[in-house]
Image (cartoon, rainbow, N blue to C red; front, side, top):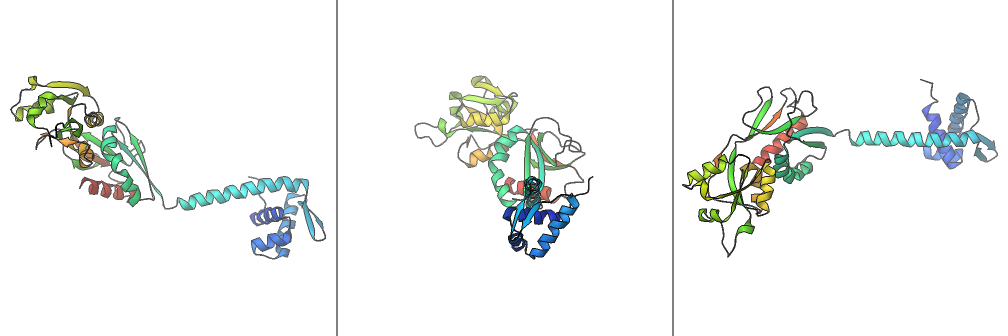
Length: 292
């Protein structure tokens, strides 16, 4: 690398060029005029050409000096900006998480503002995907997954066991009815995932024949099923965890007093050697609080 001029000389030169005065540059830099003059002379010696023409009580940039002033001013500005950015991000931690879309849409996103408020220095980066994630190689710190069983090679926290419940929009209530009853099922479309087994079990427990009911379109994403219920398209059998926020907000009502156990358990997983990172601990604690 080519030897660079002294930074102090460049700074003194930029300041003098901007003020067109050694005296005013000295005041800004809080040094003497003689010090500014000496630093610029040393810079001129290093460069091999004059930067200023000097007259009694007046200086003026030479042609080369004017060109260099533009370059130095931009370079010092860029350095200052980069240092400021580094200082502002010095305490920031990046946390990359992978989330299945249904969980992100129905549970995480409606609540995430409170995490940002509680932990403003954590840069949370959310990636939604159904794809398998290798935490050791794919760059993620944590992964939310809805599955039958956790990965034995990871640190796994069970957030909720699989539990499906029938829900409906208050839009379906007419004639001042406070709630829907079992007898009302026959008047509405029953919405479901690709597998209607949870509905079959729920109906059987209530002594109802599945053949007597209208099963509507199936959805391959539980989040879409929740949205269909909110839209008033029918009564949907959905994971209780994914419907909890909308129930709390009054956008969904629960039909009956019990649901159906499923194998769709919700886990938060991370590498065993990284779970003690402060950002991970903070996020897991926040999730626990939200699960209540």
